[in-house]
Image (cartoon, rainbow, N blue to C red; front, side, top):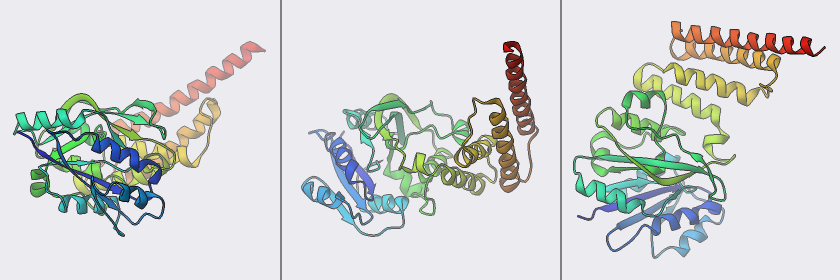
Length: 307
């Protein structure tokens, strides 16, 4: 049984990448793979529109102001009809054969509602950087870390109809929130195969706005679960210090300054999002200070020995 795919790409001024995204989608088509491809552009002023016009016969697109990435994806979902929804950003790519294997799994297993696979981080030239840290399905683990790579996720339209669309109030972690919301109700099917490349470069949201990303994740966690995992508290504090204080952590004294700053921001974060500090978290911060001071003593010992 062939299932129709609805592929949604939100876009805004990504002309240098979007054609590679488009080609990676269109290359999935075959006599057995039906794809309706919809690109929701937010009113790009670069070469994006010219590129989209070139593909008029192969996809549908609109270009108009929107309220962000989640709003664009929601718009695309509403304007398509495929049984299987795929969402890929305008700087990411699918790997060859991805849709074929996804369709086979969905068609043979009607009980499976959502599939995710492995992915790579790639650079601006599509060169492999590292494997995305994907893990087998475990909802409790998902609360602690987002181990799903968004372009490597495919889900049935049924989930949108029953559990809702993307939260358009979120700017950075709308995909993570959606996986958590769906994951509360159904298990995800993990496919141990590379399906997509997710691009990392200094201007994208993942690397370019790390503090804002982590702040929004913690706000989302607090809103959704009324609690924020310690892991996300510490992650925000680390990013905050890394982005605001440029310290050489190979220098023991500067590393101690880094640790002190992380502890300061961790304490603020625990109060801000949890109002309490767990014993485990306190012990971890104490150990950081001890370890940093031990490193200083070792360095001094080596210095004296060299005299």
